[in-house]
Image (cartoon, rainbow, N blue to C red):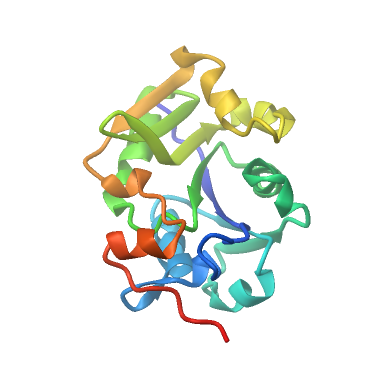
Length: 204
């Protein structure tokens, strides 16, 4: 059983081109996506690193003023999601974390119980990688033990973090959850409507 320090990274650096509006600022009820995903991550982590890139100046004011939250910026966000993960991971490594939970700011509908299940499975099995899965489909959040941090930092940004996940199936644990939010991609206004969420504000 692992009982080490778990931190989290929230990736919020994307350009949101298909949405036409910064996705972290979209809303679920009274909450912004960034506020909701921050609360989800802090439900299981001692510290959260939020990685900003595109729209950083707009998103930063919406981030909770919590001493457990650190903001990092990725100047090379256009190089893809893994480039942002590496920025966050550098901060996590510096903080001495034993494991990190990775989540996406545009996946706000994941249940808190899914985060707890992910961490519980890691503590029980000590698998270096634990992935949430819904009906056989891998999604987010994902947990990485510090034993794979160096692999993530060295991975090609063209291939993404999946190359580390796929490198050795024996070290990957899957947590099957009855939570469609794990695989719910909200990339366009149509996706929002399908999920029963309000349309992006019009920008004039």
